[in-house]
Image 1: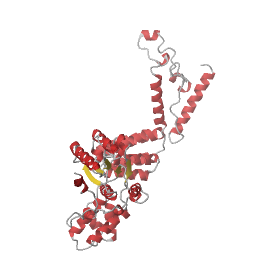
Image 2 (image 1 turned 90 degrees about the horizontal axis):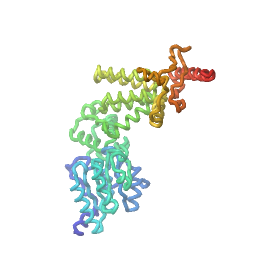
Image 3 (image 1 turned 180 degrees about the vertical axis):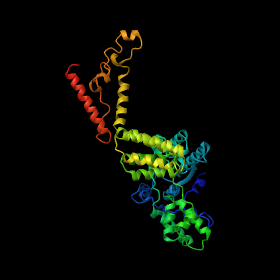
Image 4 (image 1 turned 120 degrees about the horizontal axis):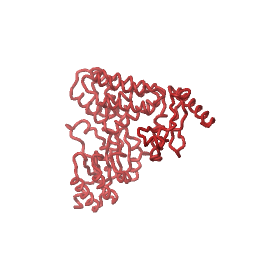
Length: 441
């Protein structure tokens, strides 16, 4: 058995891909130095570079968008430190596959071989399955290298995260993608593209190297008689759909960016992020719900029309449908971005609810309670109630707080927009209350 596993040591470089293999497979990196766009990890000062130099790996989670080199890095790591490479995919594997992988790694360990277990799409394993990795990682039976496109903070168990480094891979920039095209041309010859079309091809990949090479392979296979310009390229190839999972990171990152841009009164950036969401397939009513929430949370009474605009945009969208209705969403977005901002209502809501929980069931003053029955009148309900409309200036200045509870200040309007007028009104009422107390009323 020891001899069997000894044969699996990666002493030799990986076997070259077949000539008829897909272009992306034929251009797969042979060393870590061939990885593009991730030099912050694979370079001499990067986390992976340092581990390789030391000759020993720790377990890690590779987190990054599709087509950024997660699988290639895992394979090359095993080669670089002479470890046995084993791989499972959470999409196609179950408990039986994991047990087999751990058993084989255990046998290999007894033969003096360390195993790098690569788990693709590790976030797809449920919590119990993720817990199953822990004893084997702790004992050193395997060095775990997991790959995920999802935020590990939400997708992976805390116990597993505590035993692995999270390394973030970047989407490939234009320079990295261009270098992939150059490698393809060194193998297959010049692409039939003008310079502008070449730039358009890079932009269409949206940071995904695998997608780019598949598009390049399509161009080679077509054996085009003349170079394509950007317009012709657009008709020949379909642009990659933006990475955006409506219940995952892309969703939450963009809605957070939209909210922050609105709060920062940047209508241009707000429109950009809102457009990113809608063009990627986000439900327009979800965007409208978030705008409506923003109108209450971050604008409030600084501009009461913001809430009206958002609700009107919802009605307009439902009435017109797509694509005409999107213009109403744009209008609401611009209104919110350019409105004066105040979170006074939101802050008041939080502190008032906290106060309500802490004070429990304090009775309001009896004089402001209705008395629909004789008994209630007899015990003082409604007695000496000051009807404000009968008071001078329409304001009685009565004390409405429960007995034993001092007056509180929850709502603190800001001197912006309509709330400037609210401040003036509140100051006038406060002055009247002080005057009333001074008169002993």
